[in-house]
Length: 597
Ligand SMILES: CCC[C@@H]1NC[C@@H](O)[C@H](O)[C@H]1C(=O)O
Image (tube, rainbow, N blue to C red):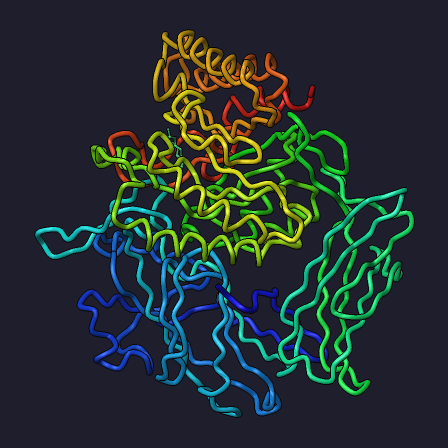
């Protein structure tokens, strides 16, 4: 659980320098880098881009599939003028775990490959000189890690991951690295929660400090013209905005919240960030934004692109937003892990709603179906206690990092966990109880129900504030000419939800068909573009017949890289767009449906 996750900025008190670029890189297959002194720098290393996954740069299989310890290292200068400040290195993510060394001294460790963390290096660096940061990463999976899987050792001695999910185990420094200099007495966090009443916005805020002695706080809110519209003082308070311009879905308006810290009337720190004035509520079968019902049109996505793997690439993000806007979308789920912080800033600006998901994926032994399936309940495993600690830790940090984004609609605490056995219930009860008050705004919490976890079979329907359904009739069962049976089964389940006393919205968070771009067949067959069109049309017909269905997010926005398997053709091809972001036939049909909604 990180203490400080504020996004790095530069101003008169704070300094932020990127350490992105080419780093030294070296595999440590015998895990003896530490003994050989790699914490002081890497001998006989190669150069590796940061941010990037290392996997797809290589031409040999052993390097691409490498599993185990591997090191990054970089020399960096710290100017003397930064003395008397806290010096830290902030990592956007390191996948999946890391030990941080500076000038040979171990600074800290971090577990969890999709959230930021900060290493305070003040006592290890030398001012006015070159310093060296060395990182020992590890990308193995286990049943007590997020995401879940196994790691095996082959007869040839090579390690290999066996994920309980299908996205590729891209590894490395997948997000930006920053060198930051901070005031020793400083702002470490803030919250801003909006209420709307009688045409005014009331922003209840809190400010957290490191070392509060003799300090005072002032807070201002400025509109997008820079005009101050509200002021307050103190570490908690309410900013009152007359005639607020609200943050609306696909019509975003942002305000800049500026916090100033004074000591004996002298300003010693300032932090500002953009917020949106809006409210979110689940009411009966509806999702309300600013008291108005919203129907979610969007996608499950992946951070995935050619060459850099899972690395955050703002060029890809920009193209994905242009595609989603072209489609008439208004939302997406960060399947199956927290995305880079910039992706949420895109959504804040574009007025997109985000279902923000932790990497609690693979919590289902049958999902290891690429490995022939493992027949037992995941929640009966002896790994559950360890897993719970890491799971809660990552939910805490996810909410701490993303709580002030107007785009965040809800928190997804699992993807397709096995909720078909009683042993799931105590685990879910602990997670949902422990996370009930983490979000100051108390946004809805949910998880995706896999297609084996139906209205009849799931034992955990009592927990979510609304439902995310992953359903694959027409693909994983009742496929091809049998699709009419698949539709009938789906309608039967929807009738059960409708007949129940459950008064919560349902969003379809996954449905789709693998589709080979350019494959055409009349009449359609599976894998053809025509089949994907017909399957999505089938789902559209069902959605239109049940008013408690309040959202549709087909799987996936784009094709993406997966593990190898006899059910994958160089990746998952359920994208509405190809991996290089060009449309398949189904994109045009779905666009027309959404334009007319
Ligand atoms: C029946 C499970 C479907 C599965 N759901 C999780 C996604 O991460 C996968 O990509 C998707 C698929 O297999 O296409």
